[in-house]
Length: 196
Image (cartoon, rainbow, N blue to C red; front, top):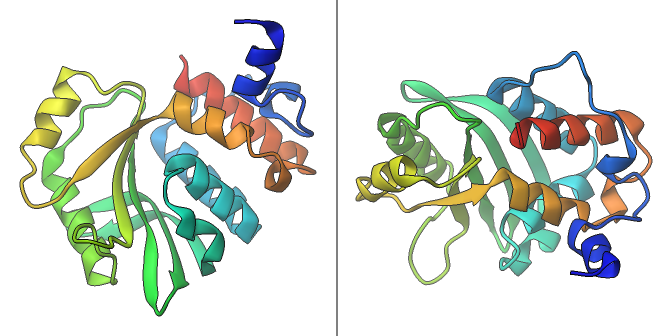
């Protein structure tokens, strides 16, 4: 792979790329800190939310059409809390993603059903010919343990997205990520945590 291919692959050269910033050396980021930080920075600009969703699920073209976008962390649902809930409105309905974030802790599938039910209760549809929501596990690797647990969930179809792929795709989308150094440092720290 040549230098130009590496630059394109990581989105290098864009203004305010996370690699242009130093990570917070003092912060050993937890899952809660990651999702609360994401919600904080995403909520500052609807374009950031759209860009994040496009990086998370690039095949869904609806993201750029959403209005009334929200990014919330630690949303109470059943016996647990949804790590990150992103919603918006389009075509008279609710669209979005229910995200369980992991940095290596065990995946507890008993709560995933509660999170999926919460998403369904607010109007997200996760199946059928036109789903309006996605159920996502955001983690470091989809090892045997994760695949095994997800296969046991019969009612809800959860998908796995690795942190590395998400963050790389997000950095390839430069426009809403520019101009905020703290946001750049946060993304760099998130990158370092995801690859620890």
